Amino acid sequence: MNIKISTVFINHGLCHRSCFSVSILPFFLLSLLFPAGKAISESEGTLNLVPNGDFSKSENAVPLYWECSGNPKSVTQSLKVSEIEGNQCAVLACTRFEGKTSGWDHVMAAQDGGIKLEKGKTYEFSCRARAENLVGRNVSVMIQDTDGWHPCGFSTELPLAQTWQTYKRLFKASRNVDKTARLQFWFTETGTLYLDDVRIVMLPDERIEFTEIVPDLNSKNLVPNGSFELGKAG
Ligand SMILES: [Ca+2]
Image (cartoon, rainbow, N blue to C red; front, top):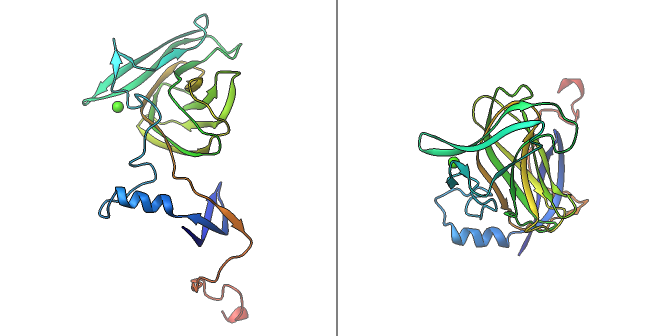
């Protein structure tokens, strides 16, 4: 079930109008699962691939499936859960950072083996985060295949604030990965990262076929004299 539509893509500040063919079958099936009356976002109703991404599960105040990673000779860090108004979040805190001399000198919350990605599929990453006493106010996020330490198509930076912010990123998996996948959040200074609601969901499969034809949509140009057909009089 395919339809031809025209749309405007906004990417990195650039607009591109393109015509493409999109399979609407996944959306039709979703409409059966979620009847009209409730707006469905792209990620609602789909499976979160990050176990304990909401940090609701913990043992001895350490979030289940998550751990610290970093060189103990140069970094003193801890990863705990903190409960704020009944909601548990992760707290990654560093009290000593003696410089970066190797790739292991970092403050990191990592989860191994929890995420399965399929090469070529599109995913949405999202989380909430805030910082305390992080001068750089930045955290790096990446998925790696620890079997050879290969990138998997997702690497980003999150600009942090002192208040909670929500972050979303789309990415396409560049390789198949499963038990050897590692999701990691890291920074390289003293300070504290608060993290919650980490989600990665696979988006509905879309078959996009770009063409060079832009169909006539009978749309009206809202810019008067936009083609300068009236000269200076317009
Ligand atoms: Ca939570």
